[in-house]
Length: 372
Image: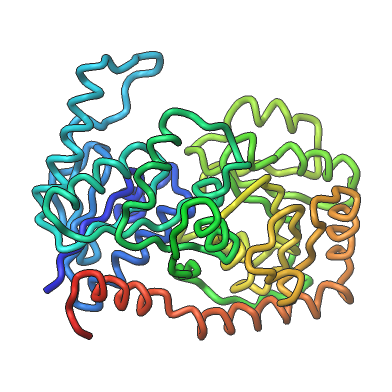
């Protein structure tokens, strides 16, 4: 039996079905992949952050291993250099102790170094799954020390998985490496809610500058007759600064973090899913929207040209005026209906084509050296 070691600190919230924990796209992808790998007969050790859970427990067939010393500190408290070094040692020690046949990582932090070192010390293969376009595109973000370390380590991974074709191209251009394209696949809940029960335009994301929630506020001001719902996945309470920013807008509803296994209801009752991000990989939210027959209305993001050529919604190519016109189109049932039907069809098409678990299994067996 092949043993896989995976790491993503906040993924514990999905396994534990915890409400209010910060969950992003990477956590959802890795949770789904870990469960699928176990169902396919592999053993998975999944390293996670300390949320007060037992040191080791099995959920959904996956062995969850708590990294000591990683619990959140009190507000304002800062870790000293010794405690930070101890945490790094604990990550490396635990990765070594799993005695995995292959290490699978998706983080842009320095942890990618420790997992690669663990694999190298044990002379085992490692697979890095791209976390974001910024991993390979030097024009995005600033060149911090951690990013410089990441740039040195990334090409040393045995295999590199890309979420979209743009990442694949930049990987070759900037790192001289070939990658494997495996689009995201997550547990989806197909639905077909009629127009009459579609009530708002939905936005989902973290309270981060690059997600550009402020642009939804601008849209709500310009479209007072339309309704907007924003889900902030930062925790059980909408951040106070967000509440102040949207204050006085009666057509906007702010919603705190909603569990992944419940959020499909919000997608199912939306007229559109709004994306205002400056950059993304392949947003899981696009997949969730299409499964619900909800067209995507995107300002800048169009992974693999699914909006321009696949009919999954409307794309503004960075033009906010066009973005507003697109959103206004989706207020019209006659224009919304064919886009909703196309979105649902695209979801089925991608689900049939995107056998991501099978591709990961093939890749894992290839690097481990086990014939299928």
